[in-house]
Image (cartoon, rainbow, N blue to C red; front, side):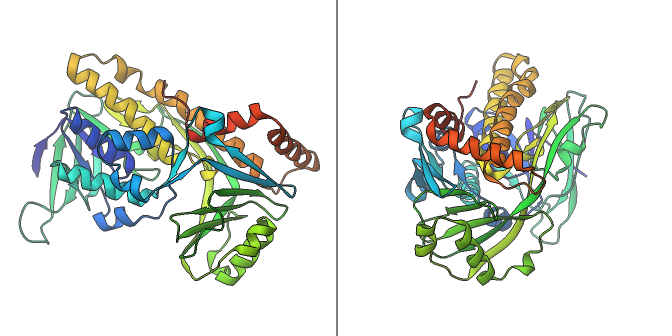
Amino acid sequence: MKSIRTQVGIIGAGPAGLLLSHILHLQGIESIVLEKSSRNTVEAIIKAGVLEQGTVDLMNQIGAGDRMMKEGLAHEGIIMRFDGRDERIHFPELTGGKSVMIYAQHDVNKDLIKARLASGGDIRFEARDVSIYDLDSSTPKIRFRGKGDEPSKEADEVTEITCDFIAGCDGFHGVSRQAIPQEVIRIYERVYPFGWLGILSDTPPVNHELIYTNHERGFALCTMRSTTRSRYYLQVPADEDVSDWSDDRFWTELKRRIPPDAAATLQTGPSLEKSVAPLRSFVAEPLRHGRLFLAGDSAHIVPPTGAKGLNLAVADVRFLTEALAAFYKSGSSDQLDGYSDRCLARVWKAQRFSWWMTNLTHRFPEALPFERRAQAAELAYLAGSQAAQTALAENYVGLPLV
């Protein structure tokens, strides 16, 4: 078994792990990133990318935002469609000039990998059998199996990394959260009775802004990846079989749910990708156990309705890098001790907003007539209240980091 040493061992090369590694590097702190998938897989994962103003600013500050600024789509609002009417929420007017950026998560991954490797970063792709030890000691350890230093591609050896700290950025199904004893961790979860059937197509977006539709047949969302590639979603039962949905059936149903003017101009085409994504709200507390710190999807999942997932991971990383930098600069562990509480305060605000947006825009199969009328009243209130629109806009573009 080969033994190596680093200051921070990072499990997971998604946006959270990559961003954490690069910011630590800029602070003079060493790290090693382990990722179970290949580089090609990480760079090809198709996920939504609505970046808050703060996320955009951070990508630029660390020198990884050039391509984002050239290819990303700045958005100053969204359209809420309900009861036969459209209500535009204008972000800059309501938030003092803030907006969001449409930029896919796999593009964020590409940019961060490029920046990290260009600065000499150590990212170990295709790391298998990752396990964590000695979390309660001052030298926690990570073991994994992967390619060794030999030229042969068949080389396979066990490596043990001794760290000062471990960051678990390996997602909902990763090993990091599982390493926390069950008697220590608390789980809060809401699984929704529906999912999003999504389709990706090389067609121009039907609108230059996102359209959120509350329709009697179910929720629909019109969004995009670029000016030539569109992404559309339909609310479907959670157990829906994607094979039951031909492209023609999807486009026909989408046209039923979106505004008539949008349906009339919608350009359809063959699907590049089609899948059903379940919706859940999930929080694990605390986000720290011993020398292990959870960040991103390993600690929390939000419904995509509020566009908070990637942005919450970025906030976790900002808090964690500040805490680690303070520790290595002064020896103080105060910020590390407060990491979980600080993150969770923001996480629960984002959970509330995502839960609220989901309840506002979707049709719940178990909803009583009273609840449907109350939902309609909530939408009507949103349309007529600048205060309500401001609250939506402030949450959507991103609440301040505190």
